[in-house]
Length: 160
Image (tube, rainbow, N blue to C red):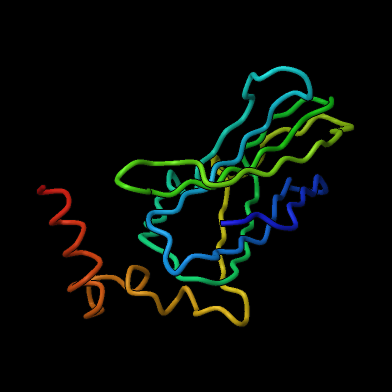
């Protein structure tokens, strides 16, 4: 999966957006991690995972997806920083980092968290991509495909 058009807006509630291009036929258990680091050094000051927000994305078909995350819980003093967006997936039974994109930015004034105590994520299909709303894992147990393929496969692999 390729990360395109990574952007950060610090106006109002800080917001990260990116376009994700999924080139393979299917990507299993994708996850996205946001990290904020100082421009120098490797100390992660802020990290949030898409999967930790209880979004059970079992798989994604080929296509483009628009990611957005509002960082409602961000406390960040003024300074110079790096944003890292990392895409993970399960490959051969192991979680692997597939791609990473970085963006340097300057935070002119302190951001103090207000409102929600966690980030708000959004993942949407681009116009030419099969709609996420129609994928079995997103429709739940009332969907025949989900019960017979998504859910059953997860139960079997957990058992093994």
